[in-house]
Image 1 (cartoon, rainbow, N blue to C red):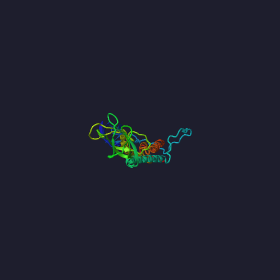
Image 2 (image 1 turned 180 degrees about the vertical axis):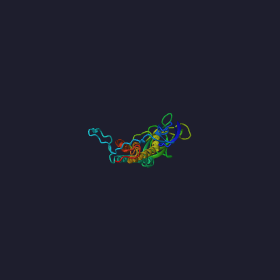
Image 3 (image 1 turned 120 degrees about the vertical axis):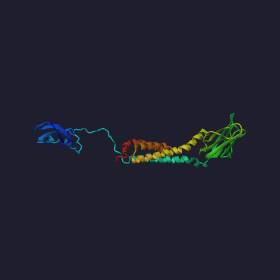
Image 4 (image 1 turned 90 degrees about the vertical axis):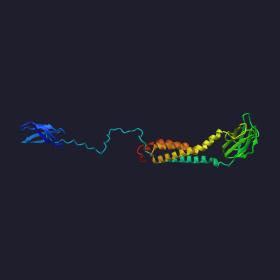
Length: 305
C-alpha cells in the first residue's frame, strides 16, 4: 500500500489516496465533486482519469412561440361578455357632467357669499316687532334700525310694524324703565309684500329686562341659521366643487375610478343651482358604474378606447 497525491481532472482539487501495490488499476471518487476516477499505475507514476465520458445536462425543451391551437371540439363560450369594450367618449361625457356640476357649485358659492351685499337696499320690506317683558306686552316702545329711529305703527298691545331696507341690518328696541335689547346683523331678505309674518324672517320678538344698564343681546334662532349659512355654505360649496373638479380630471384621464366617484359625489353635494348640480352629479355616478372597466387601478395607464 502506498499513498499517492493527485489532482482531480474534473474539479482540479488537490487530494491524496492510498493505492494498493502492484500494477493493478483501482477506482475511487473525488471527495469534492464526487466524480468517479480511475487510477492506472504507469511505472513509478499513476495516471488519473474519469471512468467515463463527462455527462452533460439534458437539453432544455424548445419553447414553442405559437400558442397551442384550440381543439375543434372545444365549445365556444356563449355567456354574457366578460368585459364590455369602453365606449369611445363615455368617460369624456362623464367628466363633462362632473365639470358642469362643479362649476354650478362654484357659482352657487359666490352667489351665497355676496347675497347680503347684493340685496342691500333693493327693497323696502315690511317687518313686525313684538315687545314684551316678564309681565306682558310693552307699550310705547321705540325701534332703532342701524342706529336710526324707525317710524313704528302700533297694532295689538306690544306689536309694531314698520318698513326697513333689505340686507344686513341691526335692530335695537327700547322702552322706558327697561334695558334695551338688540339683534346684530339681521338679514332682511327680499319678500313678497303679502307674505305672512314669519319668526326670524319678518317677525322679530324682543323680551326686555326691567331696569337700567347696557343693552342686552337678543337671540334669534332663525337668524343664527342664516348667519351659519352665509358663513359656512360658501366655504363648503367651494371645497366640494374643487373636489368635483379633481374628479372630472380623473374621469377625463381615466386614471382613478375612486377619484372620479368622489368627484361626482361631491359635485352633487355642492348644490349647484339647487337642483341642476345634484342632478348632473348623480347622473355621472350612475354612468361611472358602466365605465368602471375603462379605469386602471394599479398602473395609472388606461386601456385604449
